[in-house]
Length: 175
Image (cartoon, one colour):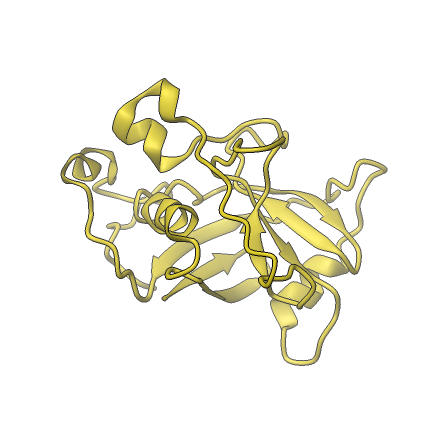
């Protein structure tokens, strides 16, 4: 199961462990379907370590899960799905970023150390950043395109899927 993430620096294909982390991957896929990530800044980049995005405020302190949209404020966060055998040490790995135990929402991070063939991640990794890790030049997610989604859409999700993406293109139009 995968998603194409189009950034201001190039494209990234994200493969998901839908069988191992169903809450997390369903959250990510449905937020992508809602175009939630379109326009999001990479608000933190730590060279040879990680790049973080998914907070619409751009501060690193915000974000909502799809479950909040579907079930209300009490469902803003969801439980951790930790598997000791799933490591966050390989370039291109994407995981939820949270402020603590069971505080997962929309923020994600990816491992960005340089590896051959991962041009977009290498460009993000080379970004000039301030002392807080915020890039001086904005790096944004432009669009996300779901390539494969094994989860049925909850009935109420349709009301949160925009007719047009934030860039004004129909949500099902791939450029």
